[in-house]
Image (cartoon, rainbow, N blue to C red):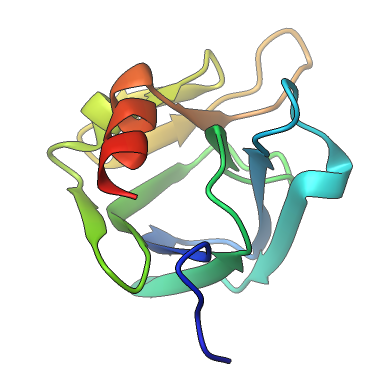
Length: 142
């Protein structure tokens, strides 16, 4: 598939020990909320090796969200890098700079091993959401 200038590729490199599902949500330009219509789900196999997920969006989104698992595992997920790019340019985010570009919610606690996924009061929804800095960088770069 040949990418057009409006296509955005997002590649996430991570380590996850259990089989699980990673969901990727985005808010398109014409919307203000996340929805199942703008979600891509990927099943992943647990491994001690670093794995990757690559998705291609046909537009530049306003916001991004990465759900860090659906199967209620309370173990860490280590994200080694996130690369967001078009055919012209890319934004490279590593594990040291991820906190500047993605913010965890209360079910994803930053730790030295990545993000600890937690069940709180029988609720489980660990995710990372893009920050205002990433939104601005996407507007400028793409």
